[in-house]
Image (cartoon, rainbow, N blue to C red; front, top):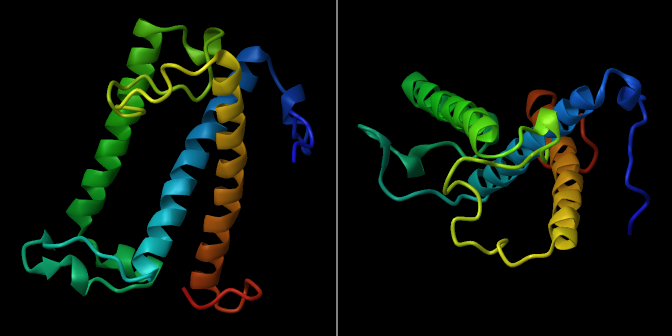
Length: 171
């Protein structure tokens, strides 16, 4: 069900210029992607699915706790640093490639478009799609990202304050 194209209850679209709105949209898409990955990861860990082998020397993936924040706390500091460094490199290269290979999103390009080679759609499923289908896919991604942001916030709230989310089991 489509309720409309614009959802702006706080009136943020009235702040600043077109570049500001593009930056907001790009940030929303990125945060939505992170939230979707976090939500799926949280529930994958909670369901008991693990990778084979070791996370680090002496720590098997299967030995990690099945609750989200407890599992994160069990990851060594250097592992967390590697994840943040990798995310930072993706961000840096996305901005670098966006300004060199295409029109930057703040200068009229598509907000949320990933420019890092091989990171998005490495098998080329989107190449044959029409501009209308790609635009609809972006709308769907934004809406799913918004829902995932709410979902991961609920999981986090339940983990930190048990009973804060009605009908939510302990996670």
